[in-house]
Length: 110
Length: 214
Image (cartoon, rainbow over all chains, first blue to last red; front, side):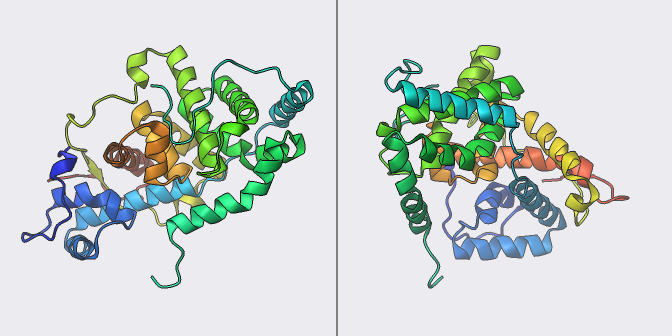
């Protein structure tokens, strides 16, 4: 993948290629491209059937995942978890583990 | 667009709406915390299952996540959404589970993908208009889970946070400790890989899958 630093959204003088379109696809789908570039990308997909299909099927890919509601968790797992919390609440001070959760703004350990 | 709330305004509203519940839980109110559990347990369990690819691990992660959250509510300062904070704990726990099962190499989030080749699109075919109607919900779930399970952890985790849990790019970067550029780059690869896998299943009947010529 092209270096991010070289990836600029400045107005282009040349026509958008399939390669350019693919590189910009994320921002295009997330609607975060600047209007001038977006217009060029939109023009490209009206003229390039392959890129239109890629764009359409990628959009649908995102959509089917977003549309899937999480399943209810088994009641036994829910009850166990609630029981643990109530027990912990009743015990008060005993700590579950020595590890601290991440502080806001701090990434998980890698 | 005029009148449309900004993302920060939406986040701010979500934080304010939940704050009384979080405050009560912080004071040790187990009922309030129970409400937070009921609200988020499905999403935490699904996320843990998708990252660890294991039911037992997902259950452990669910418990660890809420127990740690309950015990350390004081460290949640309310600057981000409660769910984002919870997600950070759950992702951390899930990655630890993965590392226990596999070698570090396969689950490193630091893997340098920027030096790899450009994302590849090999197959192109129009989808059926409504794949959701062609398959039962259970079949769809199975298809989607199988596709997501086949991604490498570094792509899978970013996709789950961005497109399944619908965290913003910035929140995803914060949760995973990655740069925004790395999140975007991994998300593009994940989306294209999933698109390709799903195209093999959802392509319109009778259509050929074509190769992509750059």
